Length: 81
View 1: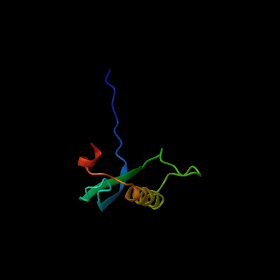
View 2: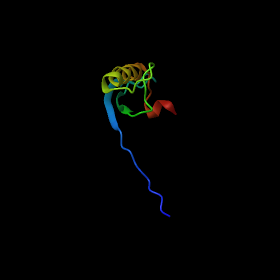
View 3: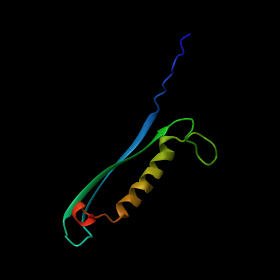
View 4: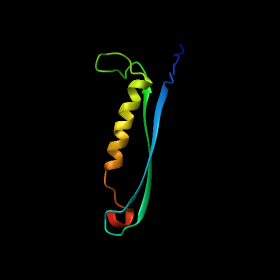
């Protein structure tokens, strides 16, 4: 008996963010950070009403996460240690 494995690939909705800032640790280095925020359109990713999220539902959530990340204060690797 052979068992078949079915792999589903769901569409990924992506939003890339970048921030440039001065280190808040006191050294004043200019830093650059990049990050990808994503969700997939799948039967398990649903709205509060129970409907499957569309890309129009997902983009505002990703934008909100991006804006929160941009507000986070970060230090360079030299000031962290």
